[in-house]
Image (cartoon, rainbow, N blue to C red; front, side, top):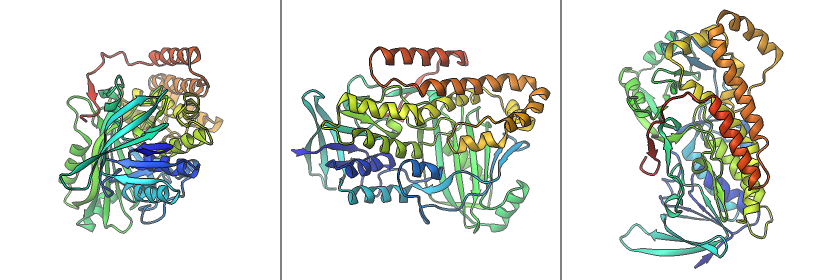
Length: 466
């Protein structure tokens, strides 16, 4: 029997960051993952705003972990005829493989014990008596052994399905299809520099710029292409809502590469199903805290969850602090409250825009970009995962567009108003459970219902199977 202060299950970015911050607080921490040391965590390039590293108290990535410097970011209509350009992208491209390894090293240096090849099979006891996690440990042979770990706090950092999800009766394991995105990202070789140069010239872009087509495969879909300045690699990022009849992100990526001779073989990358909805209303229970994708800590407008997971790790450790019982309901509610009032509020606000985008037809999206209603400041705020600042200067630039296209303004402006209302409501997330929380949930449901698209719900997807 091992006895620890905290056990973190899942050694990806969020889990490794949580182990690091908890160990820095002086807790005896065990970080586990069912996969091998070289397999844990994401295996692709992800865009992360540098400010989120600072907010998470994680040192900024350096080359080669930071792969390429940000150029312009061009958001394109489905046909590419209309665009909105952010002159300098507010996100950094980060190699997740290297970031995960760095965070794991940081966790070890802070005092956490890290073990791989550990598969959770049973969670015994309850919060009142204390919980014990039973794991199956293998050494690569057919021989396995069971390891029992007792701790007052277990952190579920096991991705969308949750590492402890199957072990906790009653935990929901399915999400509506419209709240999931089939995404893919690959780094590929450029086999023909002249072909890549001709592509950029035709698209009026420079090496290092991101070209992001949107809305071509349903309202929520994207294909982002970045040619590196040295013309050696092309980074491809794709995704589409996991709705019937739509191509997956992997299919979109492969189709793009097949149609262009200058795109060569894959160097590395990955694909999977990611959540694109607001954070879970409640992601803690006595003795257990979820983090990262298992708590739906993502940014709905484009599905990125890396920065959010890092920030959540710091908030969890700060809430635990010097508590005698790090798994007590009061301690973990403080973590949940800090998240919902901060990053959770921003995510919930942008979930309103995400739901709006899923209802926009390709022609309307192109008209929205061409009209001037979708200004570069608004796009930049979304990329940076920040609430947009509605300044007098911005309103003055949008006013002529609103007069020219009152039909589009009549659809967009209510969404912006609802975003601000949702954000304000989350900023007042209750500090205590009970009737205050029930009243808050009712208010959130009522506000979100006002902007519901009014469609029949689609079948859910089992996130464990996905």
